[in-house]
Image (cartoon, rainbow, N blue to C red; front, side, top):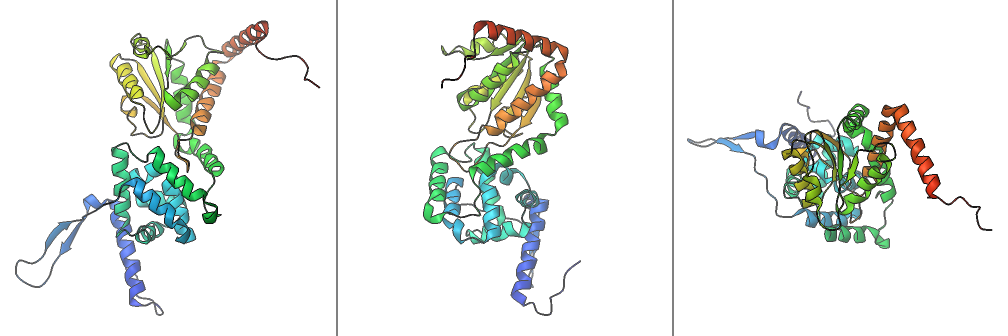
Length: 350
């Protein structure tokens, strides 16, 4: 129902509210699905025109501008801006209403934020993020470092800006909300069904995949860490078979080797299990089982906290599923480590 002009409301305020509501509706439907009828008195005038979106600023420049103007934004706009820079993928993929809901602000706040940053509409911002995601350049390390330096400037410190510790808390909370316990359990169970489990992660993704391998091999003997300093990883993956599985960790910026590994495993008929940051990441196209976890924080480098925590949840669930078999294997591991004197057992130095 159309709202009437309030008694104490001027025409300008009423118009702005209507325009914002219209833009929110257009974004909810999808700008590419909306047409505007334009008419004026006169023969041949009028017609249907598709909505037009423009963008003349890349995402790194947008992030720098947002950081520079952060202090001048209203508290609500600051809250929205902080969320958008922590989770750029959401901006690129979700509707404005969904982004507003996850950022815990009204949808109209995103419209006002766009206008405050010099854009005609939120559509422009969404287009920037979507194009950056498509091209695999949500942000370079140097651009994120510049943003970090601006935020860490003592003269610009602001209590509204979330700390990295708070961002990690949010990431840990989002693990279950993104995946759900049932999906995590299914992922963990399916990993236990393969004959051999190859595990792959390169660059920063090697740390969490090695942690998973270390824990997994304590109670299962079919794990293979694909790690060859001599550069023959592809030779190891060439031995994968249809009855095997590949567990692969990769997140933005996606390592080229990870994409090749996922593609090769898929071609060999093996099951591909992906732990990544997006359902549209390059490795997701080859995976039959996918878990996602946020890695973006207000630092110059992706966070590994959520990835490590998610894999620890998976391996803990697997120990539970394996029952007495896992207990027996872990007891044998305990005995072997004790015989090897792996851990320091002497008294503490005084």
